[in-house]
Amino acid sequence: MSEIRILDAATAERERGRLAEILADCVNGGASVSFMWPFTVADAEAWWGGTLEAVASGKSILFGGYVDGTLSGTVQLSLDGPCNQRHRGDVRKLLVHRSARKRGVAAALMTALEAAARERKLSLLTLDTGTGTPAERLYARLGWTKAGIIPGYALNPDGTICDTTIFWKALG
View 1 (cartoon, rainbow, N blue to C red):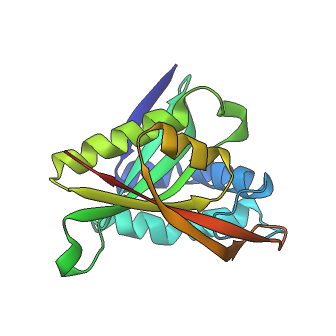
View 2: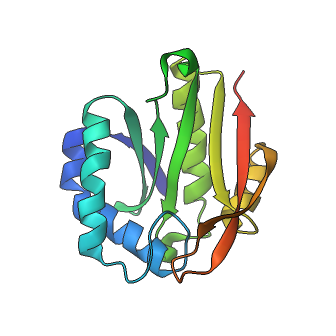
View 3: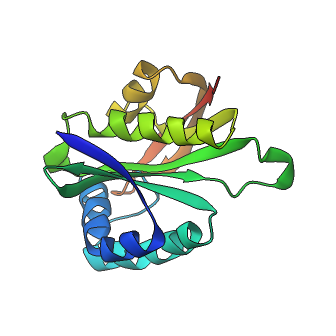
């Protein structure tokens, strides 16, 4: 059973250690989410500092997915676009701890994010993800439209090069 919550800055700060564990677990599991090996929980905790500042300033909305009361997944809706793009948001860092996968956490996080975007009158969401990953299949299943693939866009944590798929979703 999962529960999705919007985490305000104070709650996110209290959960910072668990957020760091989730990020480190994903990176150490091979997820191409901007970080390279070796990557520690301490590295992850330091990274969360800037994200929590964005949450506190209202530039980002942070969602937490809880499984049996434990924070197990997260995703962010970035609202920090240029003034001519305030009608859209960017999805960032959909992360689910490996111990909580295959339980619907990622889909529930994305559903909550889309609902929050609609409440804020956003009409378009965008994201990028590794090509050929479970996340790519999830976004397609959730009705996202593939805009294209950029070859050699990023590196996996082990240093191998990977392609990135760009998705968008119009909100009605």
